Amino acid sequence: MPTPTQPHHIVVVGAGFGGLAATRALARADVRITVVDQRNTQTFQPLLYQVATTTLAADDVAADVRGLLRRQRNVRVRMGRVSGIDLAGKTVHLDDGADLTFDSLVLAAGTVSNDFGISGVEAHGFALKSVDDATLLRNHVLRQIEEAAAAPGRASAGRLTFVVAGAGPTGVEMAGALSELLSHARADVPELADVPARIVLVEPTGTVLPPYAPATQAYTERALLERGVELRLDASVRAVDADSVTLDDGEVIASRTLVWAGGVRAHPLAAALGVPLTRGARVPVTDQLHLASHPDVFVIGDMAGPAGDGAALPQVAQVAIQMGAHTARVIRARLRGRTVPAFRYSDRGQMAIIGRGAGVAELARSMGGARIRGPLGWLAWLALHLVYLPGAQNRAQVLVRWLTGLVSPRGSARSILEPSRGVARADLPIDIAAIDAAHRRRHEGWHRAA
Ligand SMILES: Cc1cc2nc3c(=O)[nH]c(=O)nc-3n(C[C@H](O)[C@H](O)[C@H](O)COP(=O)(O)OP(=O)(O)OC[C@H]3O[C@@H](n4cnc5c(N)ncnc54)[C@H](O)[C@@H]3O)c2cc1C
Image 1 (cartoon, rainbow, N blue to C red):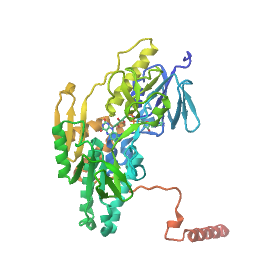
Image 2 (cartoon, helix red, strand yellow):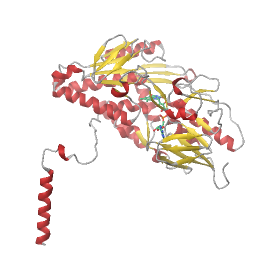
Image 3 (cartoon, helix red, strand yellow):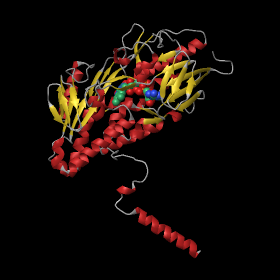
Image 4 (cartoon, protein in one colour):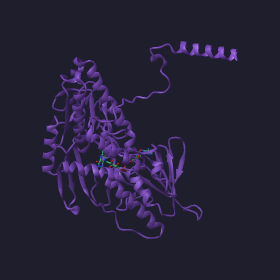
């Protein structure tokens, strides 16, 4: 138990939507909070596809965690990767050897990509979970365009064929954005004029945007087809290698790019809790969002499975934010010897964007139930994502890029970033060693003369 001089210590694992919502909601509580994240930034995952397709730069969607929490006096930020949890000893282990003890733990480490064991996805597929993933994919896509331009004949080997697996919002957004990127590339690069380019969206459930209304799905299919995206609904990826993607009906698509938006599973830390996991390796929690066996251990956001008797909630930002806020309420109430009503998710609706001027939004019944499609859906999506993007600086950067994109839509973040350490002297076409030696001789001459 905390001593009078040591307020209740809460360790929050994960500075994502859930972890930060919990932390912020505890701003006025008499507690100490340590926020641990493997990164120093919060990644705004809904905009990662725009980084991968050159509309935004990596830093636009990554907000500095210390900056976000700088005014909150009861918080310390610790960059580190949590590698284990000792529930009995109330300790979190970091992979740099440090241990953090807690009075309450809020576990909000999100998800990892799930390839369902499909051959080659891990080795050759591109996930879209982090800024690193998005940057890697952007580098790869831009390189495919450059290589196709350098040797147009060889482009038939699938350089400009992009396969996207999974037609949920991320897959739909990715396919739409790739089609726009390719049409700008064709306009910019005359060498690509005769090179065939394809975007193939693969989805096993028979429709795009599976949880949406049929009219929304029909509009989205039309909008994708108008943008030249080929749909393979009722199909799934069977195998991938460096040059091809094979579907379960035997179709082999020559492609060097599989974007994997086909599924996620809860972060492996879920398994460290020693409780039976539910579908997607998610952790079942009580209706107050803690482990039934450990009331001081809360699991929220994408890691959380069914809360109490309810069904598992969708793995979206609103769920994580509301769970974070509820966890803070529970902890505050407990410190005052009180209780709070069970967690209830307030659904606000769902939205996705297909491309410039085409978006869909379905508001929840409690919000009026409106269904919006087309330019208005697109604008609503942009406005909402700007509002929820963390960090004033990030919002300003993104707004500027979106506004300049209205005038010049070809994407402003086009560097192929492949940093490596040190000066690769062997790669330079000049003799650096000889220049260095001459430079040294000249200096020695100057010193002798002086
Ligand atoms: C490409 C993509 C697009 C999406 N689009 C939308 C959308 O349009 N709308 C929507 O509502 N939702 C969207 N989502 C889902 C949404 O991003 C998640 O539901 C939400 O981020 C979940 O919040 P969270 O707090 O559970 O986890 P996250 O926000 O993922 O945060 C987890 C944090 O834990 C940290 N972490 C992980 N492992 C460790 C470790 N071992 N040690 C320390 N820290 C660790 C991570 O660095 C991260 O900061 C999208 C997701 C993806 C991947």
